[in-house]
Length: 524
Image 1 (cartoon, rainbow, N blue to C red):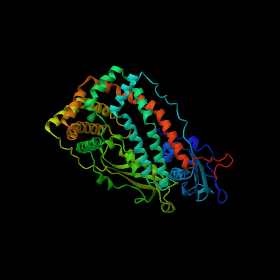
Image 2 (tube, rainbow, N blue to C red):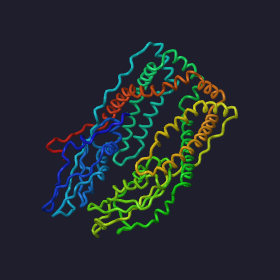
Image 3 (cartoon, rainbow, N blue to C red):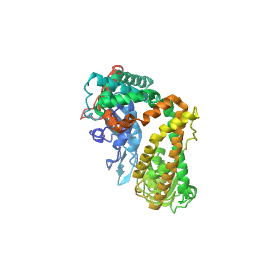
Image 4 (cartoon, rainbow, N blue to C red):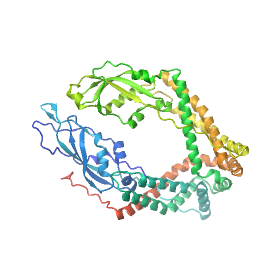
């Protein structure tokens, strides 16, 4: 389904509301100094409404505290009701901050505000028309090719998985009936357009392959269909093998890196910081996902734990600024810079502010936990030595190119160290990662061959190995990237139809009409 993103301009097109409560005299009206960004808004958009292409409107009612934060927020209006627009705006409340109200220049609590929020979807961009019908014989050949690759079934599974997500992911603001009806509408619409997607994919293949090439591919793929077609069981084992590869890379690279660089997190956590406030109490702090997302790319690849101790200054709004790293581990991988960025999410407890914390120094500790490694996974036992040998032939025919591509992509992504990363440490990390990845790739190839030899017969593997060696396989491999791009474009026309049909079905049972506020009264 198309990833809809609505813009800030639409959200804030109307007035953000006015302070409605009685308040002391000599009040400075607050104005925004922080508000949600485009990514925040996209993430908050209710998923069912986004998938079905339904717009909405809601009003957030909050009180403004002395530090400009919104508290006690609730949704006082939403339309259409029951689709999650009210909870969506409540979830965004922590992302707003105002310049606080002031009496004689001093911040004070007080004031209610109502924020009307319009949830709009962008106008869909033009999509490619479905392909025109071709010569019947060529089209039939193209359909056979699509059926052999099971691309249509992959399309159907993707919609079934999205429908399952809508139906079985519980949300306190959505009833089981709403979730079930949305899922059923999506499943029915996708099923109704399955033939359209098959025709679109067949049309795409005819733009990239000649009838003779399609005939060669179909003839060669037929006997190998069992191994080449999508297989949920095989994919599940391969996913476990990929996780095992990541575990091996992180373990080996981390050990190699820490032989050359300082990685003692415990020592950093015990490092003294010359600050007035040694044991701060935070009423706001970065979420676990924020901490993990702040790591530099090289630190994420290494999977190492990290810790940073900083000395910061407390601002009048209970925030911290002018942070300086006092101790850091591992050294040189950018943890200090990541920790400094995260301090923007900190807010000191009001009790400490009342005791005179403003302008004082404070000790800040930021810990980066190591990701929980998956359990060690061993590939299944092959059916026979011959099956293993045939599977190894299959894997070997593509593993060299795959490894070269992986190393090329890694080299491109790690070519130069980002800001805040020590060049010497970065070089050691890159070397450790490359060495560990090469070794783990060999293990992955061996596990892949063992998996294939456990799941398929010798005859099936022999046919698949023969196809891998054929000219048809090379042609297919060369054109697949172009086919994927073309399928995305032409398939969009089918996706638009699916969304429209699913929305129409759902809205027969549920009110989807948006009651937009008039310009004169943006919030009710």
